[in-house]
Image (cartoon, rainbow, N blue to C red; front, side, top):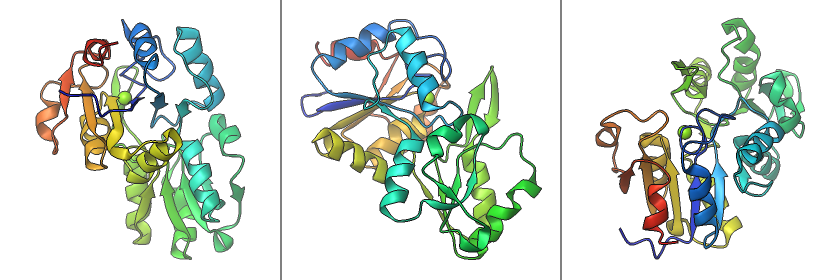
Length: 261
Ligand SMILES: [Mg+2]
């Protein structure tokens, strides 16, 4: 594969460079990321919503990754930017207490004054009753946003539901559509390309999720979507998505040779 036209590399975190969000670095990942960062701008782009930015920054630094505020792209940061621009940063928030500091720009209102419902948690500790206020806001005209719409993720070895099923529940209840702010939303890649001073087709995305990292990035216009066989990857994932990943690799280490650094 010719990577000459790829001007920036976006790394998924969980399952791609670390074992679990906030977990230890995968073998070879720290060296590979450093090598690639020597000649191309990089970003760490996660759909993870259970860790706050400060804790995630600390965890990545501790493992030795070259991360800073600018390089860490979380859904909460993207939401702040987009909802503020649209004057939608007020309404009903569905979030875990641990991430509230990252969402302090969002003003809480009663359902009848809500401009938005912002979904920021997979909601495992919520009951359907807790979601009633969000449904009411949507029925009154608020717009539904979700930090991401992944279907499932792996927590302590077990597959559990992610934000996507909760967004679908709310959308179905209120007969409303929702806007995804995480991978693979075209809006996310356009914003990143603009920040990096390049075009979307000059971005390469690397991740362990065939649908949302590799295929989704290609669908959104990225120049490459690499699928790693670590993390949540299961044999044959690449055959279940269209477009197919640009390349399936054992892990991020395989990128070092490819990018010839
Ligand atoms: Mg991942």
